[in-house]
Structures are given as structure tokens and as C-alpha cells.
Image 1 (cartoon, helix red, strand yellow):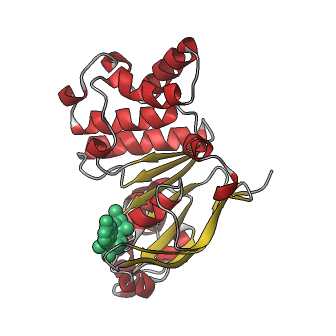
Image 2: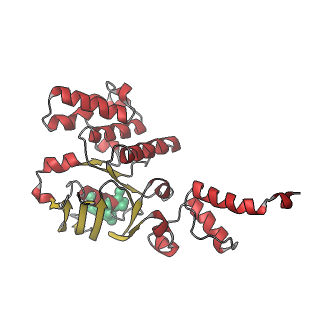
Image 3: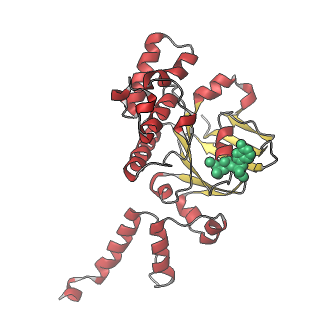
Length: 287
Ligand SMILES: Nc1ncnc2c1ncn2[C@@H]1O[C@H](COP(=O)(O)OP(=O)(O)O)[C@@H](O)[C@H]1O
Ligand SMILES: [Mg+2]
């Protein structure tokens, strides 16, 4: 089985009004990874993600799924294998009730009634919305709507989950809950997860790899350690380092605190500082 599940080859896309949104984007997405597409507003994240399940078609270049061009597959197969969660749940949800909305995809696959019911129950319980099956969509909070959107896609049993800014508009507890859910779907259920975000702080905590987008191009891909080690490139893309990394960078560059690599998360910074402070606060220093 190949490592690369989705391959984006030099795609270009231009909207009807003439805006060039993608200017030759190439990206290999590896089976089982949790990839962030990080970029400022207008950099082309949504346009790129919509190409990953065929919602948009490139003007030039191509995308392959498991080494075969999209054109090789019936559109239904792409929709089943690559689930797409819109940024705004109101663009995705349309049925009157939660249950009907989540059942829509499996019904379209022509599954038997029992199979549909068991998929809906399973998907709703995965996103912790089992008790809301009979609620109307209008009665849900924004965060609950996001969960129902994710359930609707999970009911298709996708191999790849593509989410457009899934934490946008959520409160801090909601952000943590969604990110932990995605981490679990990626880790335990082995779903490849690709999410767009402009929240740099999330990336080193949850993701294996990220691609930086700017002005319709991918500027760089790599691990958070690789990508955040070059501050100039990050600023060039109109982004900042994660807040913890900003503090550690000031301690390193202005206060001359030596560090081999820049800690990017609270956990990494804590380990580094405790290690250094243990050296300072020995018994001799205290007494
Ligand atoms: N429907 C559209 N019609 C015309 N231009 C669009 C449309 N949607 C997006 N764009 C433009 O395409 C570029 C990329 O947008 P988008 O993919 O939405 O970026 P992001 O998701 O990173 O904010 C921007 O310049 C944006 O203004
Ligand atoms: Mg967007």
C-alpha cells in the first residue's frame, strides 16, 4: 500500500471573476497523517480543500487518489472516500432533523435500512451527539452543528476527512473538544485528516505536518519543528509563531537563553524551563 493517498499535482484555479486562487499547488498527502493547511485569509485554503473531493475542478494540473486520477472514479466514490466538512455548518446541513441529515449520505449510497440506521447511530455516538438524534437542526448550538456535520461525513465511512477551519467560531472548550475528536479519528480510527486553519497555536499541539499557504501557493511543508524554525518565512506568509514559541524566541534571542530547538507548545516549554531551573535552584542556591 502506497504511502501517498492523495496527490495534488501542480493545480491552478481561477474564479469566474478572474481571481487566481491557486497558482500551481503541489502536495503529497500521506495515508494516516494529520495535516494542517495553515495560511492567512484569502491564501487559497478553502479553494484547495474543495479540490480534494472534487467540489471544484482544477483549470490545470490533476489530483490522484490512490495513484489514479480523479477522472478514473465515479464522483460518488470520491465523495464516499473523501469527506468534506464546510467551514460554516449552515452550508452543509439541510435536513429538518439531526438523524435525517446524517442519514442522507448513506441513503445516497443505496445502503439497506438497517445499515443506514447503524451507521447513523455510530457516527452520532462518535461525535458525542447520540442524545440529539431527534432534535431539529435549528435547535442546535453552533458547536453541536459542527459535530453533526462531522457525523454526516463519518457515516460515509471515509478514508480521508477534509475540514475547513473546523475550530472557527467555537469557544475554547469547543476548540479542544473538536481537536481531540479529530485526533482520535486520526489515531484510533486511522482516518487521514487534513484541516485548514489560521490558528498557529493549534498546529504544534495536534498535527504531524503542515503546509503553509500564501497567495495561492504552498510556500513550505514540513513538521512544526521544521516550519516554525524559520521565523522570516512565517512572517512573510503573514503568520506568527505560536505564542509559546514567541516567548521562547525572545528568551533565546534577547535574553540569551540557549536552546537547541525552539519549544513550540506549553509542554515542551515547561520541560525545557524545568530542566534549566533545576540547574539554577539547586539546594546550594536556595540556602
Ligand atoms: N467565489 C469566489 N469568487 C471569486 N473569488 C473568490 C471566491 N472564493 C474565493 N475567492 C478568492 O480566491 C482567493 C482564495 O480564497 P480562499 O480559497 O477562500 O482562501 P482562504 O480559504 O485561505 O481564506 C481569495 O483571493 C478570494 O478572494
Ligand atoms: Mg477559507
